[in-house]
Image 1 (tube, rainbow, N blue to C red):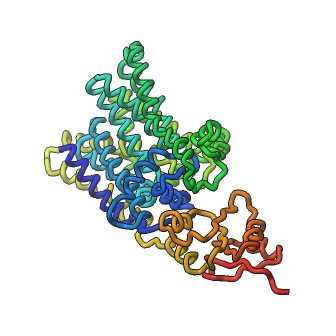
Image 2 (cartoon, rainbow, N blue to C red):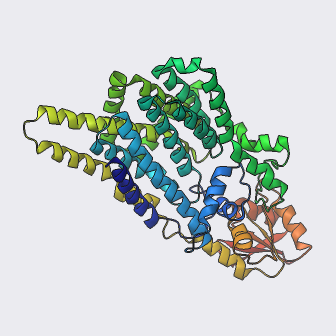
Image 3 (cartoon, rainbow, N blue to C red):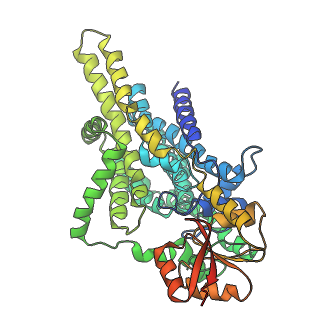
Length: 481
C-alpha cells in the first residue's frame, strides 16, 4: 500500500510538473541561469561549469533519446522525473520516521508543490536529482536502523559518494550519517572491516567524476565559457569540482551578517510553506525531540549545515540552496499531521472527526497549488526559441555574435543550424567593444541584449547599434561622420 501511495503521489506531482514544463530551449535569466547550458551539455555530453555535475549530465543525456519532443524539452523532462521520484522518496521517508499514511501524504505533497522545488522541476537543472539522491540516502539509513544489516550502511556509503558527483553540498550528508549511526549503534564504529568497505564503496560512488577528465581528453565542445579550468589536467579537475571561481563566494559573511540573513530565509520559507504547515512542522520536531532523537540528529544536521552554507553563499539564486531544509521541514510536517490525527482519534468519540481532520489537512496542504502553479508555470515560455530564431534569420553569413548565455550554442551544437556564426561571450572579460572590433575585421557583428552600459560603451567608441529585432538583437555599425 505504501509503495502504491508513493507512486500515486509521484504521478500527481509529475502531472503538475509536466503541465508547467518549459517547452523549449531556455536562456540566461535569474530564474534559470544555467538551464540553456545544461540543455546543451546533456545532449552533446559536454562539461558544465562549476562543479561539472557528471552524474546529472549522463542521466539527463539518457532522456535526449526519447522519441518525442525537442531535445530541450526532453532535458527539462528529466528534472520533472527526478523531482517526482524525489517526492515519492519523501513519502517513504515520512513513513519510515513513523508518520501515518495521511500524514506522509501531507508531507510529501507539501514538499512536491513547494514553490522553489517546483520551479526547479520544470527546467533543466541539477537540484531535483540532488534531492532524489538525498532522499534515497536518508531512506537507506532509516532502513538500516530498522533491520540492522550492514549492507544498508554500505549502500549509504556508495550513495553518499554518488550524490557528491551530482552536487557538492551532498557532502553534508556524511556528518549527518555519522551522528545518526552513533546515536543508533556505536558498535558499528568498532568494526574495521565495515569501515574499510564503506570507504571503498564511497570511492566507488565517486567514479562518475572520471567522466570529466575522460570526456575532456576527447576535446568535445565544452560550452564552458567561464574561468573554470579544463578538467583534463589534475589542477583543472580539482578547480572545477570544488567550485572554480565560485569558491570565493562561499562563506562570504561573518556571524553578525548571518543572523541578519536569516530574514531572507524566513521570507522564502513562508513563500514555500504556509503558516499552518509550519505549525505542523513545529509539532513534528517536538515529536522527534521526545520520541526519536537519532532521527532528529540526522535530519537536524542536514537542515543546519545546508542552511548555514546557503546563508554564507553570496549568490543570486540563493533560494535554491534552501530546498534541502524544506525537505526536512516537510518530513516534520508529516509527523506533526500524524500527531494531530492521533490526538483527534484518541480524544474524539465521534469517528467521523478523523476523516474530516484528514481532509482538512489535505486542503491546507493543497491550498497553495494555484499560486505555486502560476509562479512555476513555464509552459508558455518561448523566449529562448525567439532568441534562436532571431539570430538564425536576422544575421548575415559568417557573422560574429556577442552575447551572454548559451541559447545560441543550442542552435549550433544541438540543432546544427547557423554553424557559420562565430559566437563570443565577453561577459567574463567585459571587452565587448574590443571583441566587436576584432569581429568587424572578418565580417558583420551583432550583439544580443547589449544593455544600457554596453550600448553607451559602443557609442563612446564611435559605433551605433542598429536594431535587427528591437530590444533583443542589434548590428554593430560604425557611426557615419
